[in-house]
Image (cartoon, rainbow, N blue to C red; front, side, top):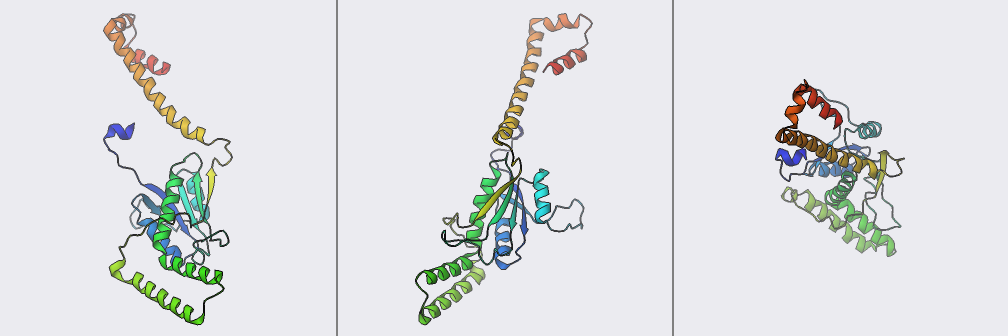
Length: 252
């Protein structure tokens, strides 16, 4: 209601997330960079500083989980060590390194959005790694490449990496049709033991809505009393307007 009546229009606010890079590889750095370029996300790798020139240390898995528990951010992503070596899986026989998604179970929207954007960012930020892993898997399933085939594959991969390194293609866009190749393990750090976390989600929303209706109803009754003359009769009984409003507020 506040956003509607404040005239913000249909602008969707950014989701603030924490990203912890435990891998520190080229692949994980590219993933973090891709997440930061998403318009729908505000990515934090270290706590924001209110004073100019003050720099806090980067988030760790422990401090990121604490930030989600405190309600500072709705989601935190932990990129584990080894992610750069096995970023994706092309089937059930090949397992990739799982990225951990920490969330609040009462917020059902933010984790789903972040998961989808994570899949997109991973697909668009690591094309060379995906191509190399795909070729390795193909060679394994067909019994290995011949020396001549391996030579061609290496040459094509070298050309592909050279193409990606060309500044003329740095702003290219890619499809996210491969969503789901990145394995994500979601863990609720707040409300994980709730039998039904949706109750907390809806209770807060409906609580605010009915509070607004109650306040509107109380204000409306005061106007009705003024029009019918009841208000004048009550005030003539040595009841001040402040006392009357305090009583209505207490009742509401």
